[in-house]
Each structure stands twice: as C-alpha cells, then as structure tokens.
Length: 615
Image (tube, rainbow, N blue to C red):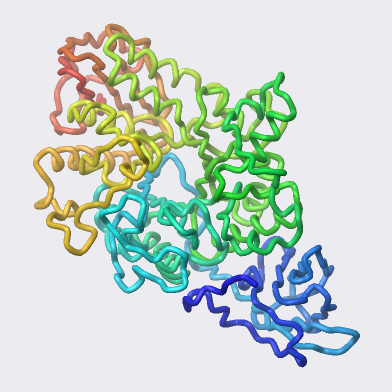
C-alpha cells in the first residue's frame, strides 16, 4: 500500500464510500473533481483502492454517463471513461461499485460550475516580461509550513544549498507589488506540485503528485490565490509543467497500474541527452529510442507517453490546473525528451479548451535549427507539427554572452543568430533570457562588470520575443553553476533573520540600485509601448564590433546601439537613415535627454543606448 501523506492537504475530503465487507476500499480518485460546461465532454477517472478493479460500476444520476470501465493489470486500479453530458449540472454524482450484483458502496464525485467571470488562460506573449522564481529560495511568507511531518525530507537548513530553505507561495504573493513596480507582467515559478523526494526536493522537478501543491510551499488554495492576486494587478501566472517524467516516489510509480506505465529497461538506462537523434536522418533507431525513452536521471522515471492512459492522466491534470488556478501559460520542462506526437495532441486538446493559452518549451540545444525543429509549423522539415508556440531561446542566450565578452567579433554572433529567425514560425513567441535556474548567473558571466550587465538588460528588454529574467538578477545576484545550488541562493530580505532587505532601495548598494533603476526604467517603458512588444526588427551588419538595430511599430521607432568593445567608439548615424526615416529628434529612454539627431554619437566602452526617434 502507498504510504499515505499525513498532511491535511492530501486528505481527500470528498471521499464518500461504505463498502459492506471491508473488502474494497478507495484511497484515491483523480482528477479530484471536474467541471460542467467544458468544451470536451470526455473525462477519465483513475480509481485506486484495494481490489477495486474487480468491481463493476454504475452511475445512475443523469448528467454523468459511464462510457466504459477499464480494469488493468493491477487490480487495485480502475480507469473509468465518462462523458459529462451537455445537460449536466453542478453537484455530486454517486458512482456505485458492485460485486456479483451486490452493492458494495459508492463514491460521490463532484462536478463544479466553471468560474466564467475569473481571469485565466490569457496566454503569455511578447508584451510580457516574465520573472522566474524558485519559491523555496525567494521569500518565506508562512513559517508554519516550513516542516511537514510525514514527508521524506523535513529538514530546513538555509546553510545548505541542497536542503529546503522555507520559501513559499505566500512569500511570492507578499512581494507582487515589488515585481509590478519593477515592470514585471508575468510570474513563472519552478514546479510547485508535491515533490516528496528524500533529498533536494526544493527544486520541484520530480513531482510525486499531480493534483496537490507541495505543502511546504502552500496549499492548492494558496496557489489559486496567487493567480487571483496576479490578475488583480494585470499580471499573469506561468505554470512549469513536467510531462516527460515524475519523481521516483510518485504514487503511480510506487504501485504501477500496469507494466508499461513507464519506459522501463532491463537495467537503468539514462537518456543520451542528444536531441539531434530525434531529427537526424542518419540516426540509429537505438539512439533515438534511448534519447526519448531513457530516464533523465535515476530518480526521475520516464513516462510512457505512447500509452493512452498515461496521455489522459497527464493531459487532464494540466487542464485541471488551468481551470482551477487560472493559469495563463505553460513553460514545458525538457521538451525534446517528450514524445512529439503526444505533445502535438496534448497542445491541441488544451487549446481546444483555451484558445488563447500559450506554451513555450525548454529546448537546451546547440543550434537554431535544433531549436526550431521542436516548434509548430513544420518550418524545418519536421515530421510532426507539435503546435508549440515558442521555445526558450538558448541560441540568443549564448549570443548575448559572446557579444559582451568577445572583443573581436561578439557583435557578429548576435547579429547572425537573430538573422536566423526565418526558421521560426513566430520569433516573437520565443522566450529570451540572460540566465535561469540552470544557467550561470549573467552578472558572473560578464565578470561582474556593471556596464556590460546594463547593456545585457538593455538588449533583453528591447529585442524581439518574450523577455524573462531570473529572480535576484535585478540586485546583482551572482555565481556559476558549480554546482547548481549556487545559482539558487536566497533573495536577501525574504527570510527572517536576514540582515539586509534587497526588496527595499535602502537595503541595496549604490550599484544594485543603479541596476535596479536601469531595469525598471526600460521594463516599464516596454510595458507601455507596443513598439518594443510587437515592433518589426531591422538590424545592420556590425562594423567595428558595434551592433545597431531598430524596432518599428505604427508611428513609433526605437533605435538601439550596442558597443561591444572595451574602448570608446564614435558612431556615425548616416548609415542608418533607412531605419530612422524622417526622424529629426531622439530621446534617450534611460536619461530622458531629448536632442536633435546628431551626425554621430559617442558610445562608452560596452555601453548600449536606447533612443526613441521623433519627427
């Protein structure tokens, strides 16, 4: 039997069963509940309990129709295919269990009314700025949930980079005004579902539940409150989903429904991490299989996404969270390792329910074609149209680092990478970033050079796509991925006992405030000007390692000049008259200085300037 978690979060309060002989029991029913009025009437319940698969089932109340009963190899599971009829009303629907025509008991399954007035599924687009948070390391808003008895890891130790530190969803909610002031429009949390693993459970990428928020981060209600509070501020919620794998202690792994619930091998077989085998015309079948079906690590079993029951389980849990918590978009973890045929069906099913909903997939790969392959649209010879909107643009991440660190030819790397955008169906849907929870913090990448770092943010907030920044980047948090725990330090001021509070200007150093103000000025300009959200891009071949590009939309034009040298450069502007059109004046967005357009401008070492052009 699965070890039941003792937290009240996991008590299935809606269970109502009365088996006459005690032979049968119900421990779980998932999804926890459903809704009337969904566009798809299909619903598949997983019923889990001792011997439940041996029973027959009846549903007599009109509105919820039993289509098919599916017993599987493990007799403790029963999969019920149901139809939520068009005339169904909210309420409880008794599901009756029989043995030899004898009623053993019933379970009252609830259908709810949809909250049609609530904001949800808006999509995350190029008019957004995403702020990525690892909630355990951001702020502790509720010390009562720091330790939960019954979980495999209960230690809280802020001196250890691998232990939990106590940050939670309440801590995020308490700092939403800080984020809104900075210019953030969307919040992405690393996975928040229960991660009942023995160690390093703080990161969330090995979930052991599909329908419960980790009680050390809050409750389901807390997460829904986060969505509501974001929407009150005209901000959005990005949910981190992990369809490829689960944690080793996921309840369906401890006691599998059937043998091919997972991709299992005679002995542990790890993925090769070689994404190119998915599309390489010369790849061996064995290499392709190991890439897609090998386990990510030993503690993260690979889900068999070719199995229809697995597909339904993953899909329904994700639809459930959109409807329940008001999620606006998904970031999809380890996208290339998923079964792409399934991902296409998964995406289409979600967009059928929520047409404005958006997705971006993590594609930590090594070239633009590799990245573009996983997108929808079949632009680079894909065999499957995944329907994926955008990717995490690692190629531009590599390019901006080269631009600022390669004194000889860095600007050309940035120019050439952006010039490959023809391979993307919609470049504006790609998420651009400087760093994240897996990558070296960019302040360290540029050698803790403030001018380079400001240039990087000037690029991030004026380039095409959806900009994403990592928590603490605005206050000069630093470190390399050696190991990854160093990238995930606490935000100072978010925890009791912190001697400084970086959430307040008074707690930040002069350099930190300089960078914070730089980001705030550009982010809020971007938030209020469509030219940096949806504007077309025109750029120029770099000369003398200076990169120039323009964003244009309707009557607005913004110019960006990036000096990638460690020396001052005088830049003649006559070359750019094609983009400057009939403009006669230019306003520096960062300094507010308005002047006539001169014949040339002077750029300090590694300086990037941003101008709004005017007639």
